[in-house]
Image (cartoon, helix red, strand yellow):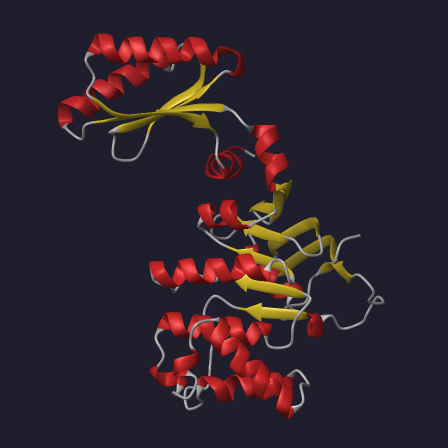
Length: 314
């Protein structure tokens, strides 16, 4: 087994509301796993059960080297989406307090707190009261708290949701470093983050895991050629593109052809053995119709494409 094995995990709340239904997955040691799914899919319930904050209705969570029934919470670092703090404490005081709760001696707690304040980029604010921190600073402090005891498993719920673009990039870089030091499970709505950072992916829908595995293997198994056509953002160009999409969507060269939000772009999924012919026909038709193209891209399906397919059709 990997670091963590989840078997048959289910959760039913009062009123027979089923939040999780027999989910199973393994978290490999030293790997970063993204937990994806639309709102209400069961991501937060899964995270809360793994973190020991919620009891499952059935199923088991087994950590390697722990006996059945042993408390695994000491092995976990957890950052909720909206972390809560004692506003009257300074950042350094809070981290030393968290370290003490984890059993670290005072000297080690002080040195570890200073180290992590520096690492998450708020060392200069360590002596300031948390009540004066911005949302992004609190998120960084929460990450430092989750790391204070050097956990075997770091669980993060939307870890960059409160950050500005610069802070988000810095925290993503930090997570990229951390995944070489510990096992990470994090939920996110930003699929680009998952694609950039993660080794594995779990996609949930309606309380079930519908896709799981190594992200490279999943992409390879589901890869399809894709063409993206973008036109000038004028009423005439959008109308011409819409008419052309209706035409090509009926041909056997494409799995699908659909307009994108805004109406000035279209995405076409191409049959694997028809790539060259599809490229030739698309270029010729766009030229013949005089459609004012501003961008034409040839690539393959992304994690976002796979995600949308999973949550809409599985």
